[in-house]
Length: 174
Ligand SMILES: NC(=O)c1ccc[n+]([C@@H]2O[C@H](COP(=O)([O-])OP(=O)(O)OC[C@H]3O[C@@H](n4cnc5c(N)ncnc54)[C@H](OP(=O)(O)O)[C@@H]3O)[C@@H](O)[C@H]2O)c1
Picture 1 (tube, rainbow, N blue to C red):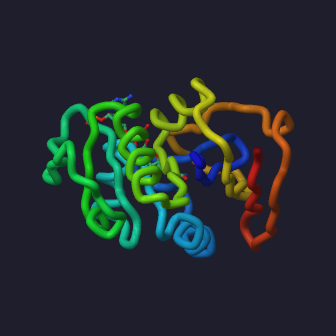
Picture 2 (cartoon, protein in one colour):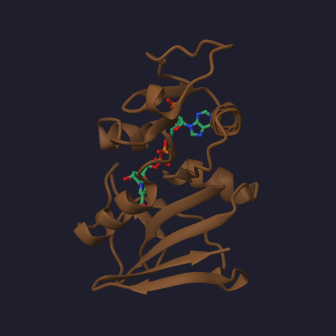
């Protein structure tokens, strides 16, 4: 399953100068809980902003300028464990998604891929409607920044799950 996971403020803001505009540990904890033991797909700038592979997840980075230190051998059957704590770079989104699907299928896994940003990657997935679920932390308030999530109308989706926290509401939409 392809999940988009993001934290947005009231104006759909997601980033400021390559950082998250707020500091909400509870949301980071939730992000960790949701994504651990699954695949991640992110843009190069988001990867650079995080600065390291996120542990216990397969980290797929999309970039035309970065080289992949991890070289994929075409006919090798990779296990999830082989790929942990490594950065696997693809020059386009389709190849990154194919890699996830192949490993999931060949190993008979039931793992999800989480699209973790940033703005340009979210835009592409939303525009092409390439997702099964939206996992949104709706952050209370309005912040300053430079990067936004596409202005979709959440009313067009069904709320599948909802949980209230101090500074935000987390909802899953299908
Ligand atoms: N609030 C949240 O939940 C959240 C989550 C994630 C990120 N963010 C924020 O979002 C901001 C970063 O977003 P961003 O839009 O500036 O950058 P980004 O999407 O993280 O990365 C952009 C880069 O990804 C690569 N890329 C994107 N689409 C591609 C494609 N179709 N084919 C090949 N490469 C592609 C390109 O890398 P190359 O230039 O190397 O080719 C591009 O320059 C930061 O402020 C970050 O903190 C917020």
